[in-house]
Length: 194
Image (cartoon, rainbow, N blue to C red):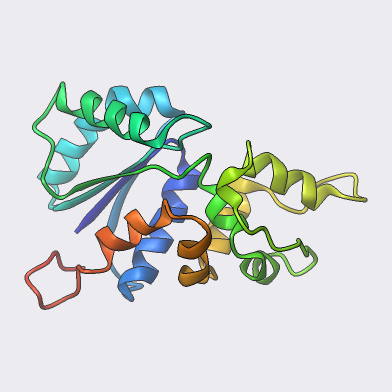
């Protein structure tokens, strides 16, 4: 069973959808915890990992945006914050979307259009190179309107339901870590059940 911990509830909910889709198991149970930012995630994730393990979780995903920082350093920071409090489970993956998780959303403009039919954006070849994918997408969805069509807390989960994984992996190498960690875990191979 998976447990997901991320900086906020929107990221956590999006990751749950992605995990279920990658595994091809819509009914899989995924425990989750969204925090109030990266500081709280680093301070409190360890206690939630312990709690999730006590409740049967065997595979853990901790997601922390790089927010313009070196992803290697972010991964190290998260690992050190966990390791200071617990023995980090061997089946723990620290996923670091380059910039923000919204880079993965931007990677598939067709998925955005499926989730928000009135929004068309141009294809973005390298979404992880922008400074703030979330802000960029909000601004693109506002063009010629008084209010944006895209609201991250509402639409990220909806877009995640339609993402073309190959397209996202090609444009956002950070997405590959999530796919690699989740994909091999198929029912019947001794891996966690649903």
